[in-house]
Length: 345
Picture (cartoon, helix red, strand yellow):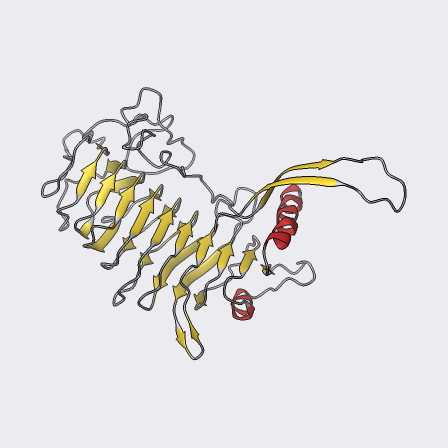
């Protein structure tokens, strides 16, 4: 109950800060005025609107987004019983009337996949989600630039499909060979991620790869058409000492890498299986401690936006509330001073 009160408080402040807020809750006891159907909420929204999707045991289904909207879920952890679940998300355009989802942000969901269906869908933020399947920028799309994919927990690959200006940062890749594939652009940045069961990037060229931790699987590196990338200040480690993962890999360049060195996580065995019960921050004696190109830790807890398990809120938050006249007579106004943090859209 306390979490719902806090969430309602944050929403009440957000209503003052944003022009249009749409609340979606598919539970039977939802508040009056809330919409139960996410597809209907997206249809009713105008470009630039914000939609809050409340946690539920029932998925809100698969959706198609054809306009700029900001989707915020309650996170994907589910420790407190609920999380915000979506099936798959498709980004598409329409011609009559003309619309484009460029500028959309998606945060705080447990979902299967995201697919970009058309070219020139730009400036997309995908943050703090749990993907059970792929993020695919589109098999036949071009010009899908300025995407930021950060702070996600991914159980499959990101298919860049030769699009440009893509930042992939502070994510945890749970498993799957390849992890990132189909990219030839020098404007692709892969930084401050944790790759479990890593073997190679598949068909990736010319990317900047820095400050990542690669925990290798039990097989040796097999190539995957990964070449001409610049590897800088990364760590590789394989618990099977018979395997070696040279950094930079053959056919790539770079400096400052730490190959076959135990990253020394705070807790848990260093093997190829991610377990959220363990702490993957770095010990003080870790070779990755403050060893990134930016002076922060190598791995997902370095950089400017460290990984947060479960999906972090960036909707407006009230950080301080003070009542200056707590004792009042009937009919007297209450004077409240509020400090808040703005949304990070």
